[in-house]
Amino acid sequence: MRQDLSVAVVCSSNQNRSMEAHHLLSKKGFRTKSFGTGSCVRLPGQTAEKPNIYSFKTTYETMSEDLKRKDQHFYTQNGLLNMLDRNKRIKLKPERFQECSEEFDIIVTCQERVFDQVLEHLSNREQVSMNMVHVVNVEIKDNHEEATLGSFIIYELIEKLSNTEDPASDIDAVIAFVEKKRDQRLLHSLAFY
Image 1 (cartoon, rainbow, N blue to C red):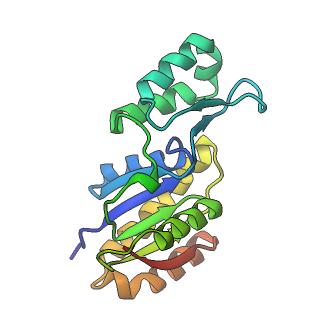
Image 2: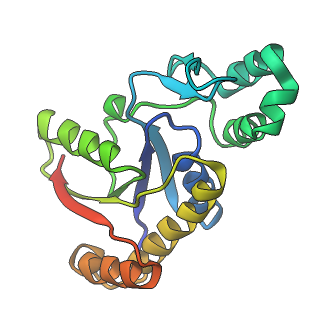
Image 3: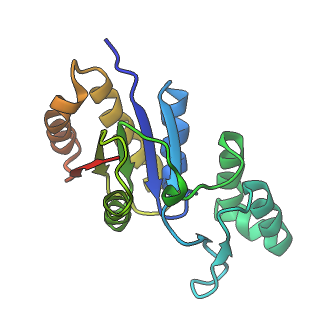
């Protein structure tokens, strides 16, 4: 019997890795939201020293129009305009994890630094319900190809968990299965709301 898990996927800017996984998990029928933990949204610029920086309040549409105005050919070639097009079909704008009060059964992060930030936020905020949440890190390099591959690892993790009798009790076995199959170490921790 498939468990109805609520899932959050978190990267730094809520653009590439978390949105690719959000897209796949939603398509597969999972209740999914995605977030970033950064202070702002950073997208690659024409040079590494000059990223495009936006507020989390900026819509994906506004970012897309700004990049088209700056250099449509360049941002089409590097895939950012396609990524933003996908993002705006999923939701209006990026969201910061630290501003979300919703509770999830599992939070999947895409980078160890983000994993640490999520755990720090959860431990520093006032615990109200004391409901448990599993936080798992799947390390994913921040490029389009790795985001796609990483989203399949996240999907496999969530799919396996949702098909167990008791996801909270079976998570260690599921993580061990995914680690062995993918030859990738996953970080796991518990936190409370």
